[in-house]
Figure 1 (spheres, rainbow, N blue to C red):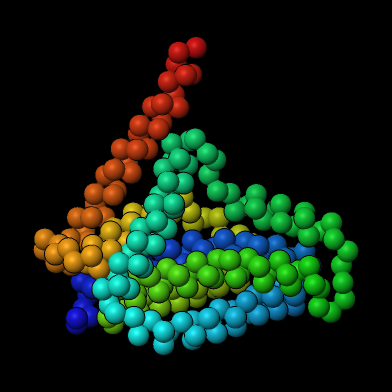
Figure 2: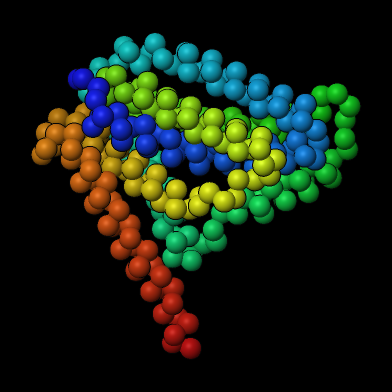
Length: 251
C-alpha cells in the first residue's frame, strides 16, 4: 500500500495530538519535581524512563513485522477503539460539566506539595527520580501504544506516526524549557475530545479491515467514520448537559 497524504496525513495528526496530551501531562509532573527537588533528579528520572521506552520500542518493532497484517489490524484496531472511547467518554463528561476539567496548574501545585513533604536528599534524590521516572513511563507507554496502533496497522505508516509523536515531544520540551511552568494554555479537554474521535475512527477502520470489511470509498471512509463519532459525541454532550441541568430546573 503506497503511503501518500491521504494515508499519512491523518496518521501524523492522530499521533501528534494524542502524544501532545500525554507529553503535557508528563511535563507538568517533571516540572514540579525539578522546581521542588532539583533538575538533576527530575531530568535523570525522565531520561531513564526514555531509555527504557526506547528499548521497548526496539524490542517490539521486529516482532510486529512477523504478524500477518489482517490479524494485526484487527487486534490493534480493537484496542485503539477501546482506547479512543475511553478518552472520548471522559471528554464528553467534562464538556457536559459532569466531571471537572483537567487542571494542569492544580496538578502541578499538588505534586509540588507532595514532594516538599519528603526530606531532600543530596545528589540523586530517590523520591524525585522515582516520581519523574513513573510519570514519564506511564505517559510514554501510552504514546508508544498509540504510535504502534495508529502506524503499524497499515504498511508504511509507522514512520509518519512516529514523526507525529516526535513533533509533539519537541514542541512540549521547547515550551517547557521556555516557560518553566505547566503548559496550561493548551486546551487539553478539547484535544482529548478530538483525539478520542480520531482514535475511535482509526480503531473502527483498522478493525473492520482486519475482519475483512471493504469500506465504501476505501481509505476516505476514515473521514466519515471520524465525522460520525464526532456527531455522536456532540449529541452525547448535549444529552448529558440537559440531564445534569434537569434536577436543578425542577427545584
